[in-house]
Amino acid sequence: MTLSIRHEQGIESPRTLGWGPFAVLTGALLMLAGLWAPWYRINLPDGFFGGLAGMVAPADGSGGMFQAFAAGIDDLERQGRLQTDAWGVLTYVDIGIAACAAVAVAALVLTFMEHLDRFPTDLVSVTALAAGGLVVLRVANPPGPTGILEILWGPWMCLAGAALVLVGSRMAFRP
Image (cartoon, rainbow, N blue to C red; front, side, top):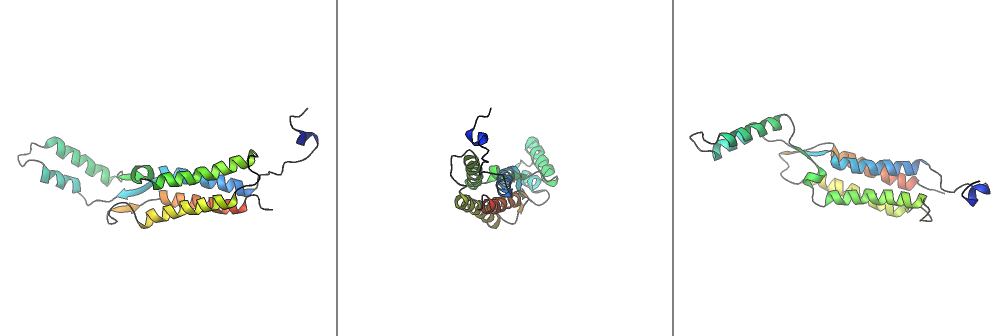
């Protein structure tokens, strides 16, 4: 006994999994994971915060707590820990990238749940291009002075995910 007339009659579902849906899902996950990956590192000159503390603290040396804090920040900067992800530095671009990934996953889910007649290839392709454009915008125009910001691997992960969503959406459900 089966729960579907389609299985009783031996009719196969027209919705089979090819490489396209897997590429869309993998690309969307890469875009989302890339938002938590490090995007930028702040490269300040050695002793920047220590020198700042020396300028701000009183000359009699009574600003010990502030100087210790500045020295601790200098240590963090030397260890490479002054870096941030997309959520920490971008205002609306991160939400746009996450929304594009959500549209791709929602289109995939709605297609396989048979709420859509066919996969919305054009919609998902446009959202992938939009997400890729947002990433390229933030790589070309980083938030803050370009002399002290170093671009890390997070944007490249998001860009690869957007490209994978684009290719996967073009491959998905082709006749």
